Length: 89
View 1 (cartoon, rainbow, N blue to C red):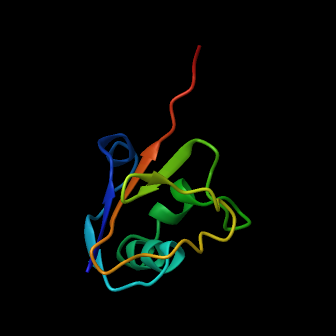
View 2: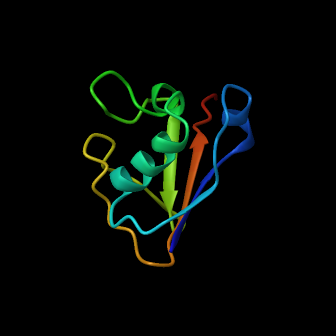
């Protein structure tokens, strides 16, 4: 099963479950997490269901580029990390 992990920063705002999921796509994996904590949805997705700009997601070490559809495929043993994006200069 794929593993979905949220970083410590998001835990400041709400409970973030670390879950194992059989989901085939990133969107479905996130829905599994939202089912466990519906409040989490508002921190991760905007009103249109797109990934919020202050977040970044990595699947197996590769940054997700589809921030709208979140249709990236997950392998059975994928590792998904959801974290706040850092900005600065």
